[in-house]
Each structure stands twice: as structure tokens, then as C-alpha cells.
Image 1: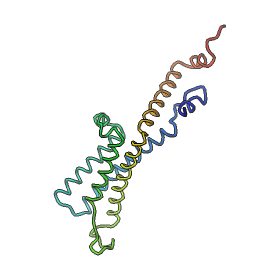
Image 2: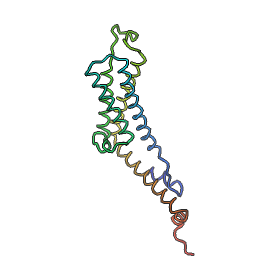
Image 3: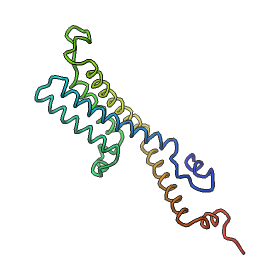
Image 4: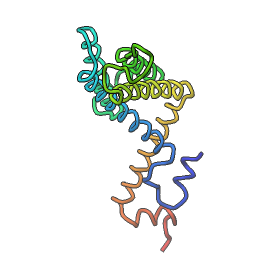
Length: 190
């Protein structure tokens, strides 16, 4: 087992995260960042894009979903962690992809003559909104694919292994060096 091999390289259990654990944390960080970018994109769309009442409601809903995604990825709100829709990676991915697609469609501006410079808004703002929306869509597809490949089960095992190694390391630290020497050498017959 790779996790055990990484733990048993020396006599003390490692408190460092494995490479796969770091990758899963990177995915959470990127997802949180994309959710914040999409939230900023919704605010920008309020400033730069024309909208009616229904579009305003969509922007408010999308903004609240972005906040919810950030809280979910940071695991700051217990109610979100207990939600089967947001806990399981497959429906979580579908939800994230859906939010990205709704944002793409809701903020979709088509130039009248086919040229991008004929947009009634700043082209940079339109590209930022479009890019943030598609990034959320891609993150959603990635979560769904990782869920279908059972990576969530692997991630759970990696996190449990890390917690166990961290607790063992803490116990060794609290017990002192004599406890570690006893485990390595066995009881001495002096």
C-alpha cells in the first residue's frame, strides 16, 4: 500500500500530506477560486450588462450558489457537508456544471454584426464573465468524472490515513522519546 510505504520510510509516522492528498486539496482550492471568480463575474455583469427582472433574479441566485460552493469546498458549514447533493462528487459535479452553463447562457451577449468589437459593453468584462462561467462548467465536469472513477472513496481513505498519522505523531510527541524507543527496540530486559 502506497500510503503505508510513505508512512514507514522512517521510524516516525509522517505528518506531511501525500501527493494525492495535496492534489485533492488543490482541486478544492481551485474550485473555491473559480466560485469566487464567478461571483465577481456576476457583480461585473450587474455593472456592465443590461438586464431585466428575471435576469437580476438569476444573477442573485448564481451569486448565492457561488457563496454556497465556496463554503462547501472550504467545509465551513456543517449543513452543506451533510447534504447528499453536495457531499457526493457526481451530483456535486452536475450542479457545478449546471451553474456554469446557466451563467454562460444568462450572460450571453451576441454581437449584432458578428464582430466582437460591436458588443454594447466592454469586451474585457464580457470575456471575464464568459471565462469564469466556462471554468465552473469544467470544474463540474471534472468532479463528475472523478466521482464516476471512485476518486472520492480514495480521497476519503487518503484523508483518514493522514488523520491517523497525524494523531500517531501527536501521541509520540506527547509520550516523549521513551515511547518511540520502546516501540523500536521492544521492552529491554535490563
